[in-house]
Image (cartoon, rainbow, N blue to C red; front, side, top):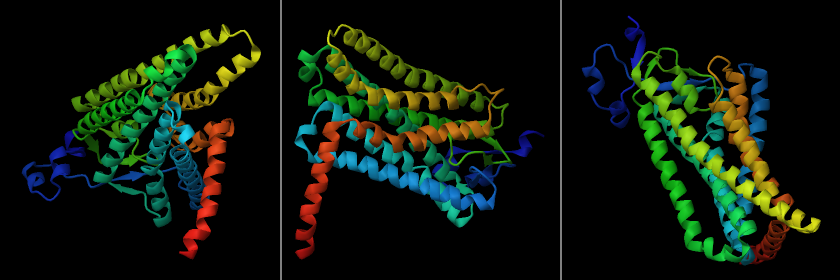
Amino acid sequence: MLMSTCTKINHVLFLFPNSDLQNMVPGKTQISEFILLGFSEEPALQPIIFGLFLSMYLITVVGNLLIILAVNSDPQLHSPMYFFLSNLSFVDICFTSITIPKMLVNIQTQSKVISYEDCFTQIYFFLLFVQLDDFLLTVMSYDRYVAICHPLHYTVIMSPRVCALLVLVSWMIGALNSLLQTLLALRLSFCTVLEIPHFFCEFKEVIQLAYLHLFPTFLNKTMMHFAVALLGGGPFAGICYSYSRIISSIRRISSAQGKYKAFSTCASHLSVVSLFYCSVLGVYFTPAVTHNSHSSVTASVMYTVVTPMLNPFIYSLRNKEIKRALRKFFRTATILEPIVLRS
């Protein structure tokens, strides 16, 4: 009886949506869409939410794009730290682009529907980019550790080949784990109520919708928490270790000016790490008994929208090299604009 009230999702139907396979399984129907409940049901609040998130999205894209352009256009910024920063900016643009545009379209069209294919595609790329954010923040902490604790060997340890390899490995691990988690999610069974109390297909919320007595649901939850513990806890432990060594090295510096200069190179990164990890832990390690969809959405907004939006400001406002590169970039653009118009 309980099985008849739920609908089986078959990953074969996802791969072959036009096939007749669904007719071969009695009592099972193909799911075609989910409902994203978003932030509020009040029609009066929809224009405010639309304007707020459109503004944050544009600020995120423009701010991170300026960081990428500044780093690539200034030869003096062709160093490991800024190489990782430009990669982080690119990931942040992608991170927000897989969730916010769909939400804005839904508000504009007054529709809360997301197709089954789009939902699981969104899950895959969401998991990929959140892991890349995590890995890149870890790599950046390692870069600061080498720069402060082993300055004489910095150029040897953080060679261009090593930097490229660290980014490549981050992409590979993120892509493989995202693929595994998404394929496991395709095995889930869902009840007839397919409302997601979120503004995008957040992985944990989608799993919460699944029929709770099926083994695939337990397997997905186990794999999700294992991946968060391993691929989230491992990098977090690495960040903590790097900063423990950094603090130890800074304490041995005799002059106050030297201590300030050393710590100032880490302050921006430490701020972003704190904001990112506090919000992620609030989503994925909230006990089921105290789980609240509103607080989960708020925490998700912090690391999916607010953190990527603030990153360019955090890394540029106290960074003289970035500000100098941006001024140089705008001067060059101002000079080239009349030439392009005349031609």
